[in-house]
Amino acid sequence: MNSADSRVRLPRLSTRIAAIAESATLKVDAKAKALQAEGKHVISYAAGEPNFATPEHIVEAAVVAARDPKNHRYTPAAGLPDLREAIAQKTLRDSGTHVTASQVIVTNGGKQAVYQSFAAIVDDGDEVILPTPYWTTYPEAVKLAGGVPVDVFAGADQGYLVTVDQLEAARTARTKVLLFVSPSNPTGAVYSEEQTRAIGEWALEHGIWVITDEIYQNLVYDGVKAVSITQAVPELLDTAILVNGVAKTYAMTGWRVGWMVAPADVTKAASNLQSHLSSNVSNISQRAALAALTGPQDSVETMRQAFDARRKTIVAELNTIPGVVTPTPQGAFYVYPDVTGLLGREWGGVTPTTSLELADLILDQAEVATVPGEAFGPSGYLRLSYALGDDALLEGVHRLQRLFA
Ligand code: GLU
Image (cartoon, rainbow, N blue to C red):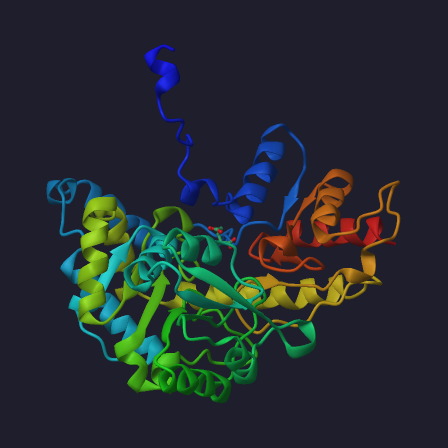
């Protein structure tokens, strides 16, 4: 026996990382972009990515920042002091919650904030309640932190909004965290102030942490307001982490600036983690984010109105397709139709039985990219982002109408 044979055979990949699935939203988006690069006229409703250019004054701030050598250096891992202060002000303005700059960590997009939030407070075996449909990254981030995702499903019949009774039924002695997101990705559902307060009070009563993802808080329609759970229940602030970022509100997905706002001990722990993981976010991007938060906000309203018009169009057009039931969302830029009426029927020689198969069929036969419900929980749904341009949006739904005529 040579020495190589006597070695203990350990798995090549760690079990924890091997168990992580690729981000389904980014996967479909990449596939659509690859097909487009091949010359195919694919219409993509896949990624939640505004089609607008980042507003000019923000870009200008980045150009100026790039020319200033002080931005060519490291800054504190938790971010530029001015930006942390601006984020504290924004949290007061939009989330109605008083926090200090020292509670803020600037992260590489909202996604890093989600991961670090779970990593900072979840221990092996801790349960995290995920209202379902959930954004595809949440359960993977929970598992990376050693936690156990516990799905609580709310379908179209209940407006994709979970109730306190459902949360209570899922609560166990190991429940550590509730993930709360309103407006929701993937459904666009927005909890009312009363519902938000009831859920916050339930979490407070049982000592359950709340990680609240507020990245879509500025994208609400029909006069609705997304009330922050820490505004509705201020006593929660000691056991809550707010996650947010500039990506969706300011058309800045590629700049990678998000943040988390947490109690001091959690901020310290997460900041320690970030100091080893990624250090500071690009200073150029941080300066751009500072300009976004402190500069004129009129472009935010212009984009919001454009999304609102697209929302009305896509809901109306999808609801002309027999077998497709599309509730009207009041926030974010997604629709989440129930497509069970299209399953088990033959379309162009293919009979899909799941929304995964349906999404493949739609991409193959109509060159339209959607994300199947399986990425967000149970089968039977599709997520379509309406953050794409008006002409493409209409062309895509017309293709679906022809395919399922
Ligand atoms: N959050 C967006 C989405 O859900 C961007 C893609 C991603 O990071 O998942 O489409």
